[in-house]
Every structure is written in structure tokens, then in C-alpha cells.
Length: 217
Image (cartoon, one colour):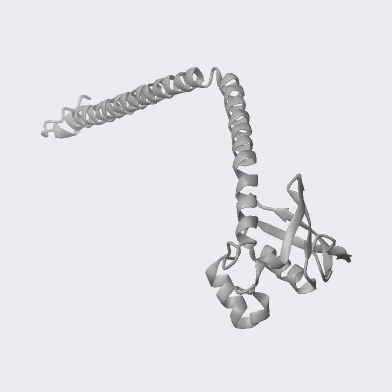
């Protein structure tokens, strides 16, 4: 027996499946296209970064080459500078050797000149005088009471020999030398009394003295 269904059928059930499949495919394609666009943009960004880094490296290489060119003869320059410095030191020593002893002798002459004294810092002298008046020199000392008979310098070490009326004159000379900016490490060497055979009439006993000191110039 054959049955015929004459009731109307719902057509939407059959057409819904193809529509959903198409939407799913479009969504997948959209995601793939979006990923391709993102990957392309990311790749381009990396290419741009790589090119920027290459440009920076090229600039650094150029600077390195310039520096290498500048220091290519570094050793020769160092040797030339060493020679120039040696010459300057030699010239300085010669000039010091010429002018230094002259200045020292002029200072000694000033120390032994009446109404004069050593070259010293005024503030230092004022402080020494304030602390103890005996620490400074006597401006009224008669320098004619002492005279130098020998002056020898070797490697800036000086030995002074001379004659004086008495020990106070030797002490005054030593004090003036200590205060001078040209002398330091002043030491009094053993002395002795000697008769003044050059004077007429009454003979005076003189003090033969010796000082050792260092000069600064």
C-alpha cells in the first residue's frame, strides 16, 4: 500500500545548513586574511628595523675606520712626544741651572746687607713674631760682624764657611737662612775660635764657623 504525505514540508531546515557553512568559511577566510595582513606588517617592521640597524652599523664602521686612520701612527706620535718632552725637560734644567744659583747668591748677598733681610712670607714672619719674637731675625743686626770665606754647592747642597765676631752673629745668620724661601735644612757644623791676625793693635778672637744647608730653585 502506497502512502502519500500531502502535508506541506518546511523548506528552511534544508537551506539553513548551506548558509551556516558559507558563514563559517567566510569567517575562516577572514581570519586567514587578517593573519596574513598582520604577518606582513610584522615582517615589514622587522625588515625596517633590520635596515635601520644596518645603517647604524655602517655609521659605526665608518667611525671605526676613521679612528683607525687617526691612530695608525700612534706609536710614532708617542715616540715624537717623548723626544719633545725630554728636550723640554733638558731646557728647563739648563735654564734653572743658569738662573737658580744666581738667585741664591743674590739672596745670600741680601741677607748679609745692612738693613735688609731674607726673602720670606710676611704673614709667616708676623705669626712667628707673635708666637715668639726670638723666632724671627734681628733687623738691626750689623752684618759687618760676619763675613763669608767659602761657598761650595754640589747637587743643591751648600756648605758655607766664614768668620764672625762671636756665636750670636753665627746664630743670626743661621736664623736668616732658615727663614729664607731659598734655603732649608740649615745645620750648624762645629766651629772654633781663631785669632784675627789681620787687625793691628789689640787682636780679637774670631769664631770660625761652617753651615750646611740645601737650596731651593
